[in-house]
Amino acid sequence: AQKVTQAQTEISVVEKEDVTLDCVYETRDTTYYLFWYKQPPSGELVFLIRRNSFDEQNEISGRYSWNFQKSTSSFNFTITASQVVDSAVYFCALTRLPGLGGAQKLVFGQGTRLTINP
Amino acid sequence: ETGVTQSPTHLIKTRGQQVTLRCSSQSGHNTVSWYQQALGQGPQFIFQYYREEENGRGNFPPRFSGRQVPTYSAELNVNALELDDSALYLCASSESVSGGEETQYFGPGTRLLVL
Image 1: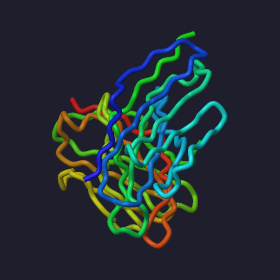
Image 2: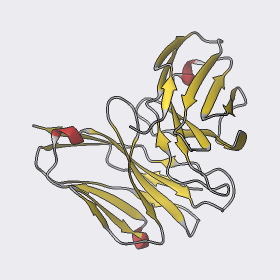
Image 3: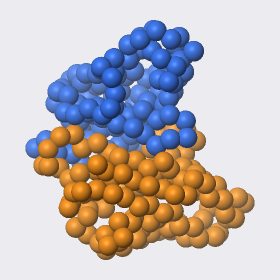
């Protein structure tokens, strides 16, 4: 069975601080995708990144960076110089790769509510 | 903007009623997935449709049903509504190649309240 754990329920920081959101996952699959989604108060899940388990390179996109460590089953997300607009609930998710049979359902963590205070 | 739309945005029903939620997927996408998100929880997979066939189902009872119709439309039907069905229902579309799928893009959701 697949499982995603986001141990941090809520995080509150002051604007311009760096913040890291933790994600730990469990899966018996040797290949899989990992995702991060952002959910603002409007409710829509906004796709941020997809990472293939084959690719352990860390990735940076502007103020966002992701640290994937297969050895510890973690896929952490860091926001540098946080801004008020970053306030949202962030979800980490896991799915099987295509071609392994069955629906590719996303298995989500419980989410981390991030509040950036001015 | 993902190009995925859902209607209605909000809905209030009473216990025992039936409801139909609609989703219009992104142009070119052939796979639609539905998720239920209870307050303060992560989304839970309900089922997925690929080329108008159910492609997999989560741990939801048969009173949750759906269909996918050409072109780029899908429905989620829930019969005999229960109070616990109150949630945000999210539709996601993706482009599936040879039965697999790529990134799922979500619509804004329908907030259902069952009284």
